[in-house]
Length: 124
Image 1 (cartoon, rainbow, N blue to C red):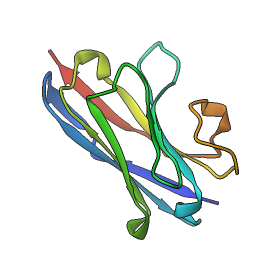
Image 2 (image 1 turned 90 degrees about the horizontal axis):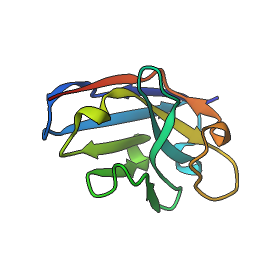
Image 3 (image 1 turned 90 degrees about the vertical axis):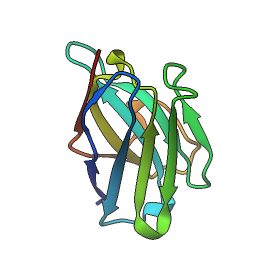
């Protein structure tokens, strides 16, 4: 069982930056692909980006060039550095872990464990 805890959310003005963290416990973090998802009010949960066991990254087109995902296996922690934030980035951000043997994927149902989420609000 992997437990995930997100932190770092908050209120920021458009054009600003935030760094979210996702700390894992209870499992072997280095064996997991990790993903960031977000869900805005009235919308479905969507893939933001992810990082594979080997450090390969994948991003949604909407955040490409603005968000950077990294991981520190020694700290069992994944990060997303978000810059040039826009009001449409406002959402609850979730991290997720995928323990399967396949490659990094963007489908939420492929992820086995989820954090409780952290709110990011971008004001215009």
